[in-house]
Length: 328
Image (cartoon, rainbow, N blue to C red; front, side, top):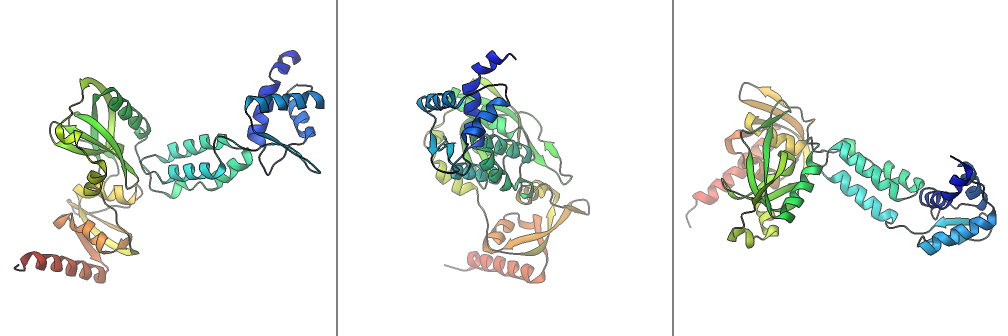
């Protein structure tokens, strides 16, 4: 590229320099600026740089001058503060509905909104690899299409799948059709609240949806949908558990493989136990809330050890049974 053409890019290079290599802790001296431009084939004198900085300031860039020894110019503010970017980065890391690869890509994009020194702080916080993340790479785009369908008041068509003991996706037969009402964030997952001709008002885990397309059929808006309270619906349908953790061995029917993988992640070691069951050993939160989660599976789930946890769960079940057997 000819030098005269490089000169035309001078302001753009200066904008890039301030955005990527300056902040309150990293000041650019006049020599830093001149050298940066020279490396890109642009000759610059101090007087012209002053004028260029003034031009960028007039454009709206918050470029400040720090006077005195070691002084110089720096970009004092950006659309996002570093604390805000850390908050967004943390939210991305915590989002189970995003795959590990998509999470890393999004945090990489967030890092372009700050200086390279601040970006290094964001990346040092990156702990996506140790978190339970979605195994469905298409979730990110499925969410976008659902929003579009809601905005256009149209139904969606998709396939729905479960996770098997083998850790693979197993699609349920046939296409699903639904009138999407809203997306709900619960337990670090996205759920689609929708109307289905087969089930009425229902919900679907977005990361278990695949091949979603927008149809040309208008949404069905029932009275139930018009009066839908998303907060109450979410509390009634979804739940979490917390408490003290200890190692527990559990036995499940194979039909619960997807539930276990959802709760404990794709790396959960499911060990076949005969043709119809599998066992799973992990550090688990043992609390009344955990017992409630386990009791929901009835005879399809069993605590094998430790004996103390098994006995405590049995006692909890007996108390519940006594409550219903006692006369009023």
